Amino acid sequence: MPPPRLSRAGLWLSRTMSRCVLEPRPPGKRWLVAGLGNPGLPGTRHSVGMAVLGQLARRLGVAESWARDARCAADLALASLGDAQVVLLRPRRLMNNNGRSVARAAELFGLTAEEVYLVHDELDKPLGKLALKLGGSARGHNGVRSCISCLNSNAMPRLRVGIGRPTHPDTVQAYVLGRFSLAEQELLPPLLERATDLLLDHIRERSQGPTLGP
Image (tube, rainbow, N blue to C red):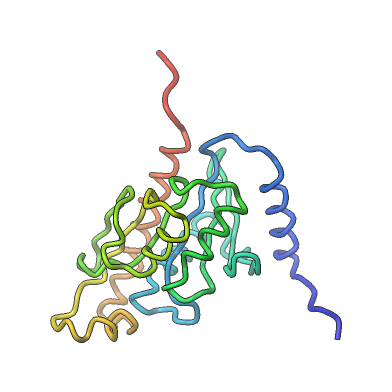
């Protein structure tokens, strides 16, 4: 049986990635944004980072451009933001191994840890709260821990998306792997919009670079 043909989006992405890896680029003009989570479990609290990536893709006009890349075991979409290029990544590995996909994509695109954004759930913030953290420890998050280990750095900026913490510690695993309640789902659309705004504003500011003289 002949191998399956790549979709038009897949062919375009493969060729574009090849150019990205081979051609020189101006420093600080390409960014990777990774939504951490578990593939195949949309709508769960632990995969809210992937939900943010979906909204970001829609805002950047690439929601129909996702293509699987076997080299990093992830779905990728490429977008433009002014003069900068933004690589969106949704790992196809489980949360505890998300770092392998993120690190491989960073290698393919020639990016440093400082140019890789991680978007993930945060138990210690209530639902609706956002925080952009510049580097630091994993704070008990296995997906972030995997990224730190595989990138050999803790310098990645992270957008922490609050999901709240259950009352009983014994229920944390079931809570994060569970779906948002109906009441919580009503809060998600504005939360995803604000998360997208925060990411884009931060990337735009960093893409401009330092001001050169008066």
